[in-house]
Amino acid sequence: MDITYSETIPDLDTYFELRKSVEWNNFCPEQAEKAINSSAYFVLAKDEERPVAMARAVGDGMYYTIVDVVVRPEYQGNKIGSTVINRLVERIQKDAPKGARISVQLLAAKGKEEFYVKQGFKVCPHEYCGPALRKVIYT
Image 1 (spheres, rainbow, N blue to C red):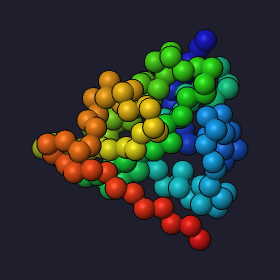
Image 2 (cartoon, helix red, strand yellow):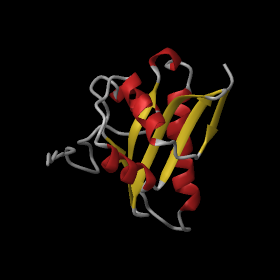
Image 3 (cartoon, one colour):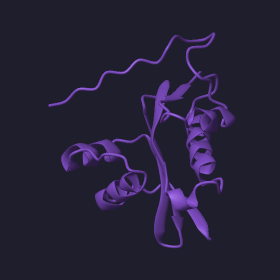
Image 4 (cartoon, rainbow, N blue to C red):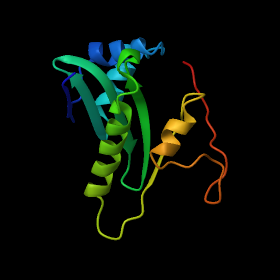
């Protein structure tokens, strides 16, 4: 296994293929293309030429949300997921101005919370925030 990491935004087929590898539904192509190209940060992991993991962050400089954290099942357990998360967080921190305070959050898939706790995230609610809320809109 020769894993390399880059900040390259993948093409739509690669994005869809990685989401499908973990049995996630895909969004419509126009919506997905706009979303991935609007990412603040993107980390793509490859084993030689094969895309095996990704994660991206969307945000405005003060608040970021990490989304689309995917590691192909056959590559899980090899620290690839923690590496893509840590690279995103490090890049966000590196680009922040001196004295900045940044909030980075994410929604974990059910049962995956402990993975993110190991990466330094806190489960909400806790002393700094209330519960995470979500609204999904279908058109």
